[in-house]
Length: 500
Image 1 (tube, rainbow, N blue to C red):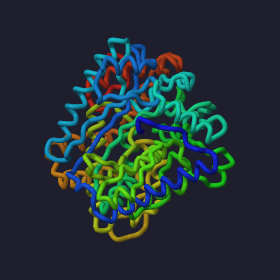
Image 2: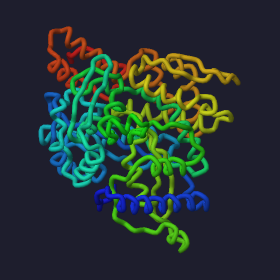
Image 3: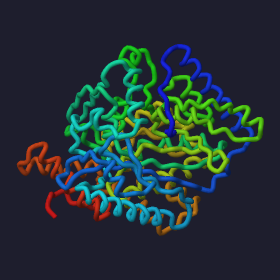
Image 4: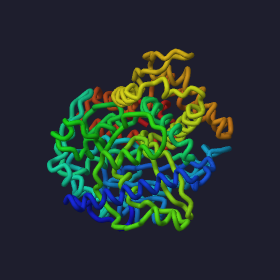
């Protein structure tokens, strides 16, 4: 979000003015896409990780301002909740030993941040949802001390007009009414960016959508919501409901939620930004009166800040990003599917699998999205969120058949998708040693049927079986998770006992 924000204008004339500004931005984007001013990608990828703060007892700590002050680095920033941080890794070229380089940079940065957090009795935790978070931990008073979060909360609550209802049924059912968007802060993710040309954007986005389910299946790490065991990857339903500004009667009429998988394959990035304007009223404004078409006529490049801000309040799992760096515009696919953690090695393995798959699938002569109905991709995503590494997915049969088959996620990954990911990493120019090391982590997870979510659940139930009550078992499991996370041994190698 920009530094200077104002509330969205909810009166009819104000709403019209904002829509006019957004339409001008969209027209400017259309001109830009047509006149080929975009930066030629240099195989650049970016990485952001949202983090939790917990104490040595495994319980959340609401103190990101104190921790950030001690860290003293612009690489670390606030996130929505006071128990959250975000770390941003500078863009890297997908080539050579980039995966090992990323791994080393992440380990170094997180180790430093963790040392600083410990100075105020806190620790850095990479996990999709901190299992010890309670619903009472996330109210409006626990939002970060930043006006943008307060303003966003006010505008989303005003748009909804009533409490946000959280109702997730899985192995257990959790229901809760929240008077703020703060429960969203429970969801911490890894965001993978890939810069692409306008002509290649649709292929990259469609490929990312097609593989979102397998990303979740092998990478799930969020089985608990406020102490209840629900879906294996519970971030998507929690995030959707915590940001759902639709009153129930409007949702019943088919209005789209702001956290959205989408509903169709695309042919251009323009279509996604146009959907944003068509389906989602603006919540915030920069207050800027940029004239994008005049800027283009004068040979300049418009910032399109209103377009970017509006896009930032629509939480697609694969989001289009328009940005301008040093006066040159570019497009990125921002993949928001994965939970944080469990270890740096696991994070880099997930990234290798994603970047390899997207490259390979985007370059196929008969792309998977021409054979996989979009509704099946969306159903796959929900199945993977519910069942994690045990999910059964729909996928096109090999050969020229147009029919689908149902197959376990682990079989699909091992027999078809890992070879494709390896081929894609080869096309990027990634060193074979890096390729084999990190894709090997994905293969071992599939062989053993273990990911972060299954480890958390198994360890929690073992603690319950040992006589601990629910809260004590969650805390003990979280402490063990934190200890093993710091070893950087991938999660499929972790023991499920609480000793050590």
